[in-house]
Image (cartoon, rainbow, N blue to C red; front, side):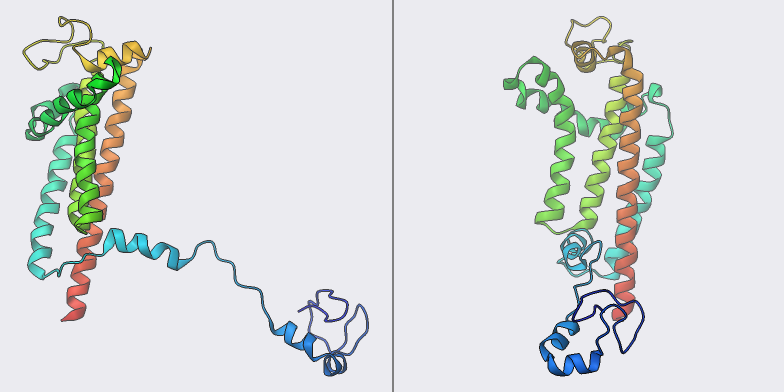
Length: 250
């Protein structure tokens, strides 16, 4: 507390202020308003307010639909499949282009090509970049809709996994910017096709980063792997939480 008269801080409990010499009991008897002031304590300051984080926790971990044990089992099977699939996609090298031979590459390809059309009004550079943006935006939109509109966090975690997979899908194409060995749509190859046909050869050349194609591809691959791992952890946490909720209600 502070002395009600001289306001000096008192570190040891005492009946008399060591600074000004007043006797607290007598002083407060004739100054009751000071006693009331001493009972007021400053608010406790915390690094964060739990009420402020509650909406985010509800958004990421709470669902509006009723979840049964059958839902949990089905989702556990999906999660196990995604874990195995993730290992199959991440473990091969970028140069092997295993992503280009995967089923999901054929799913991503229409969104890639649609991106070129959507972004065409913004010039040649953005048109080339639009293919990559298109295949990233579609799973990102799905993630947002499932999380914000449908209120399905588990579905959003799977869509986020798809976002990460698209980063992996982009990496071999970027890595091929200088070599131009990968087959392109229509049967062409980067080394023989007209300039601008290979998206990342054009993008990196125009931006002066062509010599960094391998390094950039590795960075994109690592980002995609991290996003996939994060989405799997999110899905796993949701499953454990739902299972505990079901056991608690039984």
